[in-house]
Amino acid sequence: MAKDEEFQPRHNQNKRIMFILTVLALLIALSIGLYIFSRTYAHSMRLGIEMTEQAFERIMGRTVPAIIGMAAAGGIIALVSLAFQTITQSRILTPSMIGFDAVFMGTQTVLVFAFGSFTPFFQDPARNFLVSSVVMVVISMAMFGSILRKNKNNIIFLLMFGIVLSGIVSNGARYLQTLMSFYDFYQVQAATAVTVMNMNTAVIHIAWPIIVVIAILLIMKHRTYDAMSLGPEQSKSLGVAYNREMNYTLILISIGMSVATALIGSLAFLGLLVVNASRELLKTHRHLPLFICSAFVAVLTLIMGSATEQLLQGSIPLTTIINLVGCTYVFYLILKENRI
Image 1 (spheres, one colour):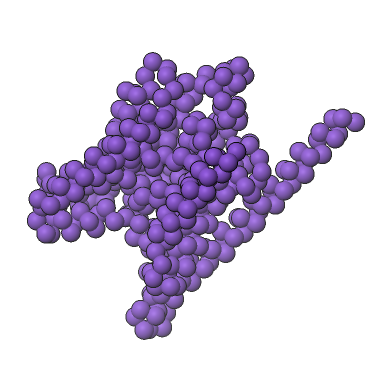
Image 2 (cartoon, one colour):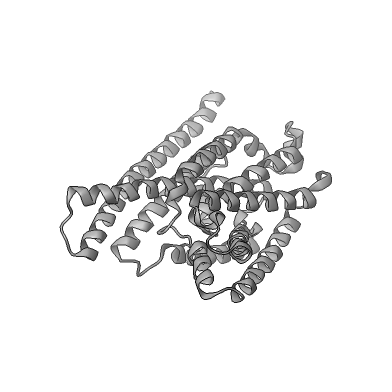
């Protein structure tokens, strides 16, 4: 009898989670349709012509890679953000604080400053993407190796170091940009202004396989993260090699965030928003449904937001809204933590 009473709440929770995930999947399908409509509508309105079959095929040739890019980048940002919050034991932290966006901007600046804007490593999208991703991964791994050595959990110091590094790299990049010619400066600005609306779709075929592998590796560890969310001591008592799993997770986070940043630019607060929204929706601490729900919410946010931005002709930038809402939500979480 007691077992039946214990099973019933869990069964009801699973049904609720499945219902929410199904609704999110349907909303994503609707958002994709709206995004396709917004692209074709914006094209017709901008040129003032009727949509022909040839024009529609050309638009779809750019729209499909954009949808894949938003789904891949949004999904991996959500997954690594949830894993990062688990190992840091904090709901107000995001892996963007380590400074991926600043390193991306610094890489582009140094490439142009050292070799000129006509170098193949800057002009060729595939080479530029690989160079930027490798540099971000190497720097983040160097940070992990130096700060998290000797099996010490210095996550807070890692975040502080990342914030300082971000400031140094950003200001150094801006100084180098002042020494460039106007043309080179414009090229760097165009390359570092990667956003949802003008993502680097030419490298989707390189980015999405890497993102899929990282996503699978993270999801496979969902039971480990369930234990790690209890804290270092409790998870160790359950047989989890906490420090090893933490370092393994940080490696996956660094690769995932590097690829996503090089593909779609900086979305500092997207992961924080979608992960916390998923926690409120599902009311569970299990990471498998949280991983799926967070990815669904991120994909829905990017595609629906991009469709709305297209229909409004860019008058309300999506990244601005995400960062504004994200900053407000961080303040709310901080105040909420202080009241507890």
